[in-house]
Image (cartoon, rainbow, N blue to C red):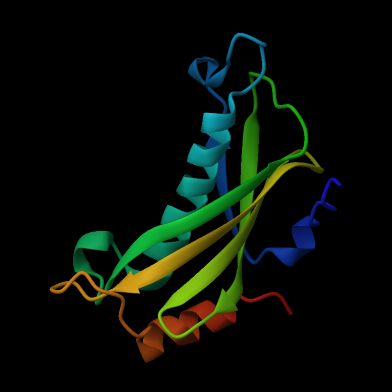
Amino acid sequence: MRPTPPGPERFPFWTEEKLRIADTDLNGHINNGAYGAFFEAGRGELLTEIAGPPQTRLVAMALARVEIDYLRELHYPGRVRIGTCVARIGGSSFALQQALFAGDACHAAALSVMVVLDRETRRSAAIPPELRAALERLQPS
């Protein structure tokens, strides 16, 4: 059963990416790997916005899981918008929900789990209060 695509109103944070000819595959549409890269760009921009550049963050973060539902084909040329919101906040991890839009149509949806790591031990660590507060502001209303 195909999931119902989320609407753009769900997402408080947006990133835009250009479709490249190098992203196409033998079927003439944008390759599934490019969808993953678009979602990664959205996660990276959001995390930099709320926590600063990776080199100066209080904690490190690692991607633990990602699920992508491919809903529609994309074709070169064009641009896509990636919407992101915080779906869940735990003790040492949080989940980001994302959707990929071209025009008004949702072409893919993703759910990613990020784990917060202590910079020295590289083990999971509690989400610092300031990061938690920033994540809470990005949850859907």
